[in-house]
Amino acid sequence: MNDPQNVNFKRFRRGFVRGLAGALTLYSPATIPAPARIDVQPLREPAKSASEALRNDWVQTGKDIDAAVAKYGKTRSKAS
Image 1 (cartoon, rainbow, N blue to C red):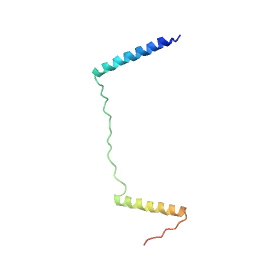
Image 2: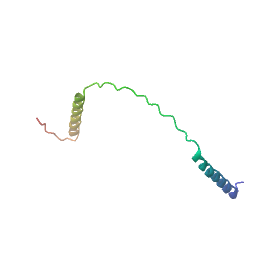
Image 3: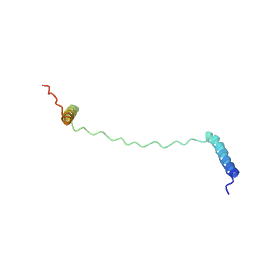
Image 4: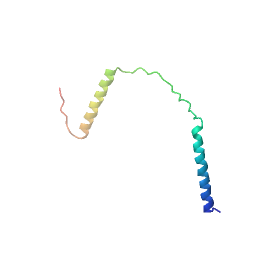
């Protein structure tokens, strides 16, 4: 059924033909893909000013630090 010599010959023939086809593709025209469509959406106005947003970030950071200190049972001195 599957003669090893016949299978090896088929593999050789397939590789040989593919090798010839590879050299021919050097002279074939290159297909250029279509450019991607990019939809540009306008930016929305921020809800808060930059200084207010930065202030809120630092307030949240301070709350996170206080929560971490409270979780591990250590006290933090408050600077005035």
